[in-house]
Image (cartoon, rainbow, N blue to C red):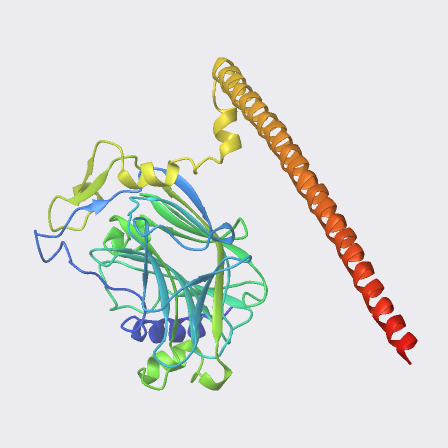
Length: 376
């Protein structure tokens, strides 16, 4: 593990990186009373990216760059300068658990990230530097407060750019735990975060993404925190997420800020079923065999009987058509044979007549010739 001075320095540099990171809010409830309500997840579900070719737009929003899907999972790629990819949930959780199976991107200055972010800029992070093959960073922020530099802490992990690992955040009202492959590496108690003032405690959405902290256009502090300048000639740089499990501690439909304090006590949980929960828990479409198997025995027997009757009728029609066609073919053959025989007979008669005619002609010529000989 890094020494305390090193952690402090890196923590300070990480604060400078927040402007470039994928952390922002469209409407801050601490500054406005007109912010929209947050759509609750209201359930527990797993998104397996290895078995799909896209995400449901009602559940996830892809920003900045396209995400591709393959046998290993969802691939987030930096292909060049100014390119990044982020998958952001349209749902929020109000305390709960997020568990991500992923492989970080390699490449100096390339940042792979798992972020929980609230509308009032509470934040819980996992971040991975592409050039750091031995450690992962844990971090948090309360209401966007960046006045201190002692929050980022790095923990050992076996080559996160080459191996898939399980990175988990267990977020409760009284504490936050970060886990690597099921083992708790860090615990933050509520009171340890500036007496609870900087403790993340308002509904958060989920953001998975990749970006170039080492881009030459980034501030020097960000570049140094990211591990150095990014060499885009070595692109593409790809982070892969195979799955994510998300569990919401509440089962309401929406979350609303009751005031501008930013306290978890002010959050109102609306009763009812979440539309997101209905979507993610809906059974997948059944194929014809599954639909048949889901029917009652009586319905299955009726369908089989009906299908058998239809098959028998079709078979009878087929046999009738074959028989009819065979009879028609036989008649056509008889007619053709008769015509052939008639034609043959006529041809034979014609040849016989031609033979008789030619024989008579030859006799006249012989007689005339013979007479002529007598005169000589």
